[in-house]
Length: 163
Image 1 (cartoon, rainbow, N blue to C red):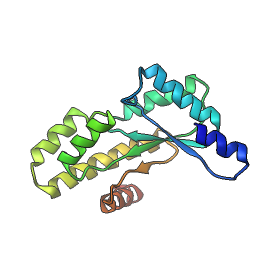
Image 2 (cartoon, helix red, strand yellow):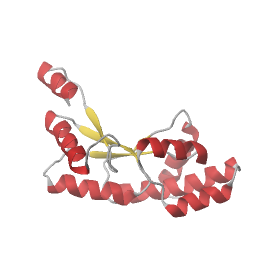
Image 3 (cartoon, rainbow, N blue to C red):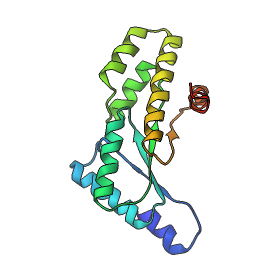
């Protein structure tokens, strides 16, 4: 928020974004304190806010409702990460403090070490997740690719083709 304020006061013409944690930042004392941090960023002049990765769309929708109720109009861009490795995503979700839906966990575990099956399961889940977010009014989607852009391109092609 301080950097956003500094840039706004300097008169430089930048589009400024900030981050938010729909499932609460791990270092926040409480969900309320975490939400207060978001409000400070929004009021400092952020043009948009991008979420930490999440896999449960209800978390994003609930957060959007909280922002609406607080009168915040800064667009909330959902941040999504296609799964390319179950081991990797397990570590990342622990670090990020987010949950994977139980049915997706079971599907990924059933894939075992078969990378193609994991990719297919991730592709199917990610396309459905994106569609629901877009159809519900999300202003766009940010993909965390971790240098694995090919699955993101497949997601975009599926969304574009309606498949």
